[in-house]
Length: 546
Ligand code: GLU
Image (cartoon, rainbow, N blue to C red):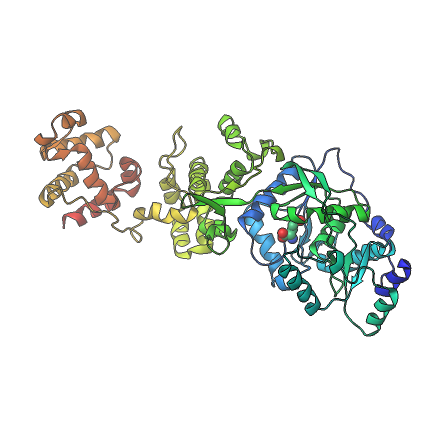
């Protein structure tokens, strides 16, 4: 067979040669050891937590080595592409602190290795595909859907491996006359890779996360270009990662099954393979069993969830790092205040079998992260979240910034800061009792206390309360009211003989707390009352007495 002739017959419009492409995309000039990584999603409009897991890995590997992290849009499957898909990807990731050095931007490209949308690179792929044909490494296949279905059904019936190989590869050695005849009839064709692999052969492959793995050679003649001349993922990624200078491919382990084909493709194209890092699945516990986080069942599978719930970006990054690198938590304990960028991220500490994602742990991390922020910072983030999600509360926060910052300052700054808030969406409830317009009774004083006792205590307290008291005088007053009403002012004494009293000074404090905050739990009551101010304190106690 004259393969040059075949190549011209199939792709007459392609005038470029691989050498032209190599010249158009020269090798990157980067410092020794610099890693070039890419995030390569399909613009389906949905990003999964697993995508973020991969994107963080990409970003860290590139940026801890002086390399480049770029965005490539894998839009070769029109059925999976949604309008605004690219904007959704860029914006969702930016909200989680992931930005790219180069690649697709909303209305075009940034960088020298574009276009970064695969749908705009048809000529490039066809140039390499044509070269494969010239070298006898690819051939056209005119099988119809019906013929492929018949092959599949026969393979199923005979319990054979599915696919286009061996005797099923009916166009593999078709004579040129037959091919020409189909072309003349205008029949569509796909271009298939001519595999020389044998499934009885095993080879060793070094994965940067999984280590040495055994791989079985591929013997299937997979499609490289579809009938519209658009490549499959397999072919497109090989050409792109070569031309764009990717040094490390970080992708989900579900791609391992097609790795043998990718190894063949790189070899056939004469490309050096990048290093591969196949990441484990992100799992969750469901009734004690580990399972994959599912887009259908778990709201936390969607990346938009984190922004809309109001997770601080720093918390998401911090938590994801704990599941990405097994030594991160230890490092964090030793370096509580260091910026996360100082951590030496490595693929060697990544999970091989599956990374467990636990929302409760994320919430804990988030509480810690927020507890270390200044009141001003918390105010800024909470306001930004409210502006997008709760404009009424945003107006409340903006109406008196100093008041809001005072509230958020309670219990902040010391060695053991309070950890009340995990999400920006929780700030409103946390602060609401400080605002008359938002104040609502959330808890009642337990029924075990008599209404008369409660009223007597609160009436006495209202008389004795003085906004100018310092914390000692303030507590002294509560004790005095307790004693006067038969509640024990001393906790030790109370514990020794609780039956001798109606209750303790702690119960009296609780009555006051429920009266002024509407809740059984609140931050330090003295500080709360200082901030609320005399009028509100008196009004709320009076309301309970009425
Ligand atoms: N477009 C592929 C996906 O979304 C990318 C896999 C890769 O990173 O190579 O899964």
